[in-house]
Image (cartoon, rainbow, N blue to C red; front, side):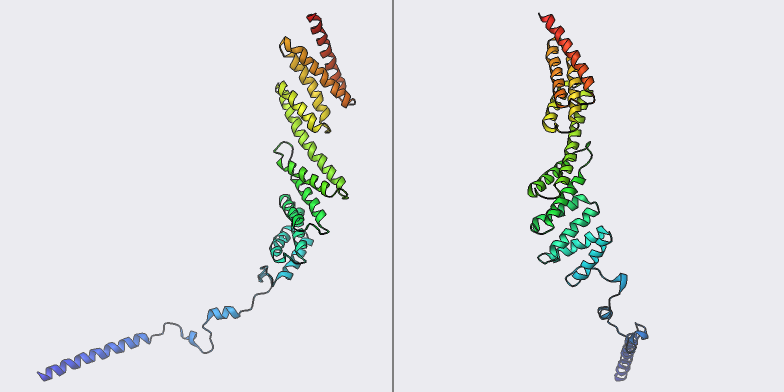
Length: 307
């Protein structure tokens, strides 16, 4: 019995030793190539990247910071001077927050606005020139910035057929410049821009008058001409508007009921009197006079009938 027990113990001991050797052989197997563990080969890839020198040339970082401020400023000036205005504007925009309160701040903001102006991005140029005049009201560039703001808005004014909101903005800005700088050498330029913008508004209004006349809305045309002459009597469209009123009132009278004809023929004659008094050299004054004479003749006929 004792011998049987000893034999069983020996078998179990042998099995345990075999299992231990199998585990040892598994853990001793190489998972990585031996070359990775050669002497002198670094294993810390992060550390290697940290000590790696930055690449030069076109791969170099162009991030704008306090450390790279002067380099970025010089690069922005080069872009500006060679006409790459959009690239210059992008750099000046990043530089300005770093330059606020420094001697370069006003120069950077002005060049930022002027880059947009020269790139014909007039809405952005106007906005940044306006910002310049508010932040730097006493510099040698302030007057020119105010002028360029007005010029930029002038360029944003669309053709007369569409909405004229931008035209009104431009007119207001030019008026503000003239009021603030009455002795500026640019006053004549401002007056020229102002006349062009006002004439554009006059043209839009005159086209509306013509539309009413051409569609037979005679009463509306009458009212529109009166409003037009109050607002745009100085415009080149004023004599045309009065001439159209002469024709409008005569046709209105001709198509009216008998009781209204005399009143509207008189309005035709009054329109001619205004045209002849204000614009005696008008190209179509003879045609207007012909209509006027017809109106007087018909008034006389009506008067004779009423006697």
